[in-house]
Image (cartoon, rainbow, N blue to C red; front, side, top):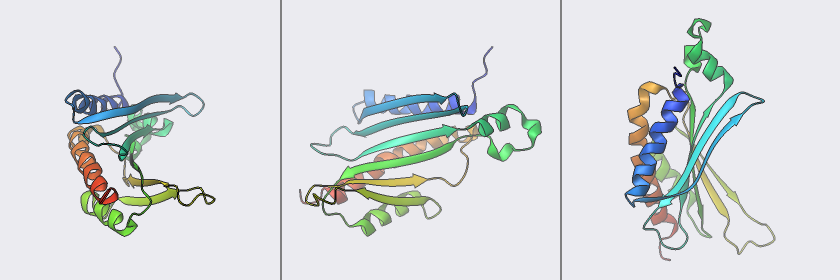
Length: 177
């Protein structure tokens, strides 16, 4: 009998919770990927969505789970003594387009919601020859530790924080439009 890995279990929990919200009409799933890299023996799962009631341009988020060969080996061979490597890495990426946004306000928003221990970065991708066109902004929230199966309930709860982040981000970036 196949015993699912921590990656499989976490992926199914996140995916199920997000599809429930999609079916309930609260969000709209915009993309989903489930990949195995045979050269590196790693796995990656990501799912992207936006708030359903958003009109026109809206912010979106991608939740990404990664598991490397080292993570899998630490889980399957506990005698290796590397239990701290068992689990997955988790990353959130929020995307939006806006010509005028206060990046300090965005930073404060994410720090308030996700806490000071998270690594929060912002990037803007723009065409320097067409500065009048809105750039693609990305806010990344990274967790400084492995996520483990014991935290399955936390992953479901995290989705509420993701949705709150999206709603509050849209209030900042689309204010006055």
